[in-house]
Image 1: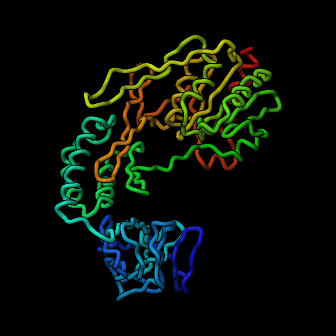
Image 2: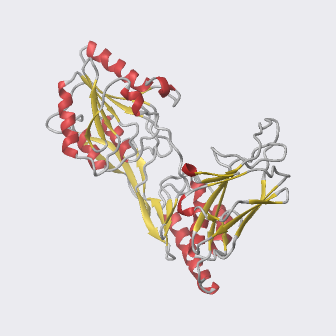
Image 3: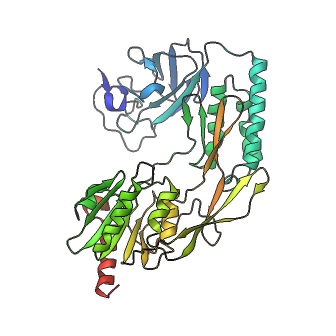
Length: 442
């Protein structure tokens, strides 16, 4: 029976339930029409995938959703024992993404019962009217030369992961230069840039954004775990506060974006002076406006301090390191303070952590930050495709680059997502440290 799993936009059909024998090797895809990453005539009505062995013909799972999931006509069908055929209605000049099996639906399996590992399948369709090939070929050549130039002169983390750009570009050259459409060029460039493992990099073509590397980062933070220890009230957008029974204030800032009311946020900091100590929790915060972060940090820093440096990249190559400073305000917060940090802290929020490390009496507690700050800038390739590349290298005050390394806490706290189901080890450690400091008089 055909069953639509609406939350996952997944088409599934299954026969009798089977337990997967653990010793069996999963089946493999041997061909796709169109190939993964390929281009298809929008008039095509079938997607075809063939496996390396006889398959269980009583089930299938075709997963995906949203505008990039093709409109499927009727039920997918097995053509013989090894080939699955999906009837579709496609639009011109469009990108499509499918997954054969997914985390919640695994009905594609071999005749013996071994489940296919979830397999992504992406392709684009040709526009309704193609440019003459000589014209498209010239567009591809010009865009390729522009991309190669940008990677050589404007990509600040060019050498962080990739060590052989000549070899990488050569491996992708034929696909880029042979792209039949501008969209296909964007898809090919996205495949090229996956080698950088750089979440600052992205490409755009019309309505579509391509992200070569988009990791799912565990913040090691759960609001419900915090609420076990104290009640939270909203201060402003992205900011919440609370206080423990023994008078330790807690301020959660989930982002430094412009919708934060700075005055209310700063007012909440000022009100925390009535407590015995303060915890500033930025574990779920991925960045925003560094200026807002600097205004908060200025309450804790005395005088002017260099908290970070950066090196800009331009046509002349890397520039000299530029120092960024934070200046303390006239009224300073002097109570014992802890900043909670973790692996989702990145960009301007990493700058906030570096600022707070310059403040006397402040400890950073938790886990290492993400190590991700690039100040990306968009560059047009001349064929309707744009690429965003990081324009600087983010440096610690001593001039060392922390991209991919992160900022280490002053006090490391082991913590996993499982720990947060029943406890809050990072917050507990912060409270213990502050209570000991209060006991000792600061």
